Image 1: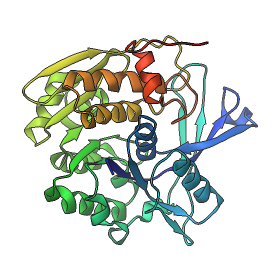
Image 2: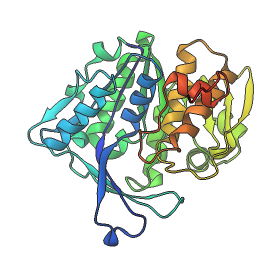
Image 3: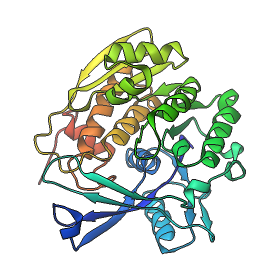
Image 4: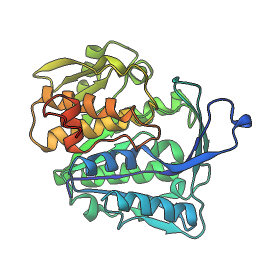
Length: 315
């Protein structure tokens, strides 16, 4: 296994029409979860990936398991909990603005993912373990499980990839800051955004964000700059890499997960730091072309065409 990740995935209901949800009557059903997004994106790019979570032993849980498995991701460690329910999330869209997100995940099965559900031998079988700051926000139970996982594999030679993914709808920033910085101390690679830099290390300057995270132990910092691209550094070299202009993005949710997947794909392929950032920008940009959290992630051939590396032939 090249990459393993774990965390909550919910059933996503995407409105068929824009406007306040009280006036929307039809929804399409899909899945939403930062960690499963990264897993699916990496699988489409040709990597061997595993994802697990605790899902309700209900039709929504079975649906998530089926979708992720269908994308070529190993779900052998997924737990279907007969006592828990599967979380739900609704989007509310207004033209091409970022959608509003409504969570229905409190007391979900995933929020009870515990230390006993973590198989350290399974985690140690991969090259990269990718985690996010959403998991510790769900409950004290999941927070303990996440720290147990990271501390248990840190000495086994596994690269730890961490996306802070600060979600202020889940916990207050004062509580989040301390926990996320502790997780960052355990990370090899970190993917902060500008807003997360403001909240966690008190700066929105990409170079200062990178320096702050490197000072606490991260070896590679890939800072997401939105449509402006990214800033990447390993302490020896640094690059600010321009992004791709998407004039009318269809859905921006999932772009950050696509960015992380693209960067990790580059790392796994032995690419230069700059090339990793370029690939991350490409995958992240393509994620915004399609409505849905994970539907827009490209295959390897598609992202190569998008980036102009290979020729696109339409007929």
